[in-house]
Amino acid sequence: MTRDMTQTDDRTPQTPGAIQGHAPADLAGMIACPRCDAVFRAIEPAPNQRAICTRCHHVLIAPRRRAGKRIIAVSMSVLILLVAASAYPFLSIATTGLSNSSSILDAALAFTSDGLLAALSFVLAGLIVFIPAARAVLSIYVLAPLVLDRDAFPGAPFAFRLSEHLRPWSMAEIFAIGCAVALIKVADLATVSFGPAFWMFALLVLLVVVQDNLACRYSIWKALGE
Amino acid sequence: MKSARQMGLVACQYCTRVWPGETKICGRCGHHIRSRDPVSLQKVWALWTVGMMCYIPANIYPMLATETLVSSQKNTIVGGALELGRHGAWGIAIVILVASVLIPVGKFMAIAALAFGVTSGSRLKPHTRQILHEIVEYVGRWSMIDVFVVAILSSLVQLGSVASIHPGRASLYFALSVFFTMLSAQAFDSRLIWDADAPPEPDGPPVKGFGPVSQITPDTTFDFPFSAGAATLTVASATERRAEPPFSDPQTRKDSPT
Ligand SMILES: [Zn+2]
Ligand SMILES: [Zn+2]
Image (cartoon, rainbow over all chains, first blue to last red; front, top):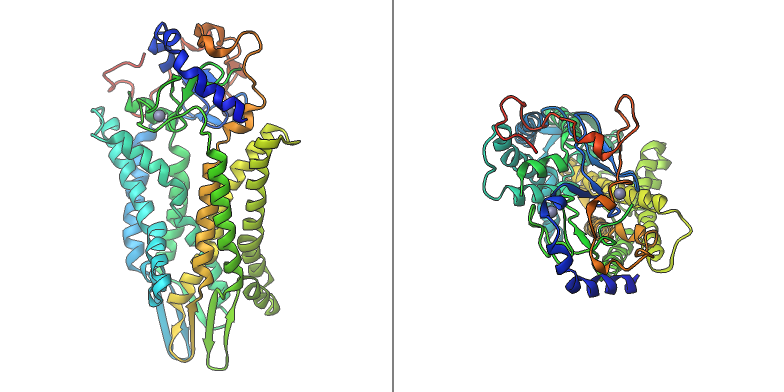
């Protein structure tokens, strides 16, 4: 393995001659599988068809009809739901005259009582609210000009790359399942009920799934251009 | 089928664009690109070790401290799940045990197996290892569920002397462990799995450059599982295809895609 890598490093300085003779346009029409490195000549499939790497079966291109408009619509709904869900309680608890309800920000900031755990509070707030919101804003920023057939906003490639970077760290849907687990866990301790924010979050989970299924990286990068 | 490395090219893993071998920054998305990261596996192991070191205190320290009128108890992850089981809530106990024990431990083993597979070969097929990596990347985040449950309970169950729940130190270590294993799985370059399968060309070293692209076109076909008719389309037949651009209606689009 190490030997192969050094070969790669060794031959890079020797290749420019061969590469300069090659039209860059040829490279622009090619696509490399990010998972297995196989190179293909890119053929854009029709909407709702998928181009799949023949070597590792990774989905390379999966365009959807009017994906841009639909992603923007979904992203706006995600933003509205996040803001609304942060304000309302998502679970409330009541027992023998005492009651308490908790909003998402309350939950994220539950660790602030302890110095060392306080850092975790801010991270959790990020994972549940701010990263999903940031991804929605970045998607709108990147796609709005493309849908309106204008030039991309400055920094759009960086914005899209950041949004892709944040994808695994957007954990709103995991939080929603956590709510259900917490409800069952304290059910014998007190009466627990879902607040309005829980149902908003359940809807949000569906929207995030839709958003991820609509987005085709290849089509967006191609539209963003060089 | 050839890999970008075999052709003397370098591929961007973000936007799938292919560049000449000496390119350092992707001209389309600005991502730093390199054919293979020579220290990729070292990064994987370093992050794996930190994740493992955080996972140990996560199981020793209490995850939750519950105070009620009659009792006060501190539970570790496993202890809390067993406690739930004793109360008859086996379903939820299993969810917690799967998310906090089975998934993290399985993830540590899977990442170690992937890294060992690259250095000393593996009996598993590359495709199997690829699926393993995808599962690790997908499932890893779900371990956070227990930290969220602790956060929800701690903010919700604040009923004065009747009942209150406070987060324990283990929640911090557990969250750190999830983060570092996620980073470790991300640092693993799945292209390394396939490299053993695709040694440099036997007929002449790839140092000569990648040659005319037509040489690679015969086996560069795409699968269209949902297309009616042909299962695979060759390059020639596909150039006539006109796909509707996904970002705008064709009639409003001024620049025609070439
Ligand atoms: Zn592939
Ligand atoms: Zn790129």
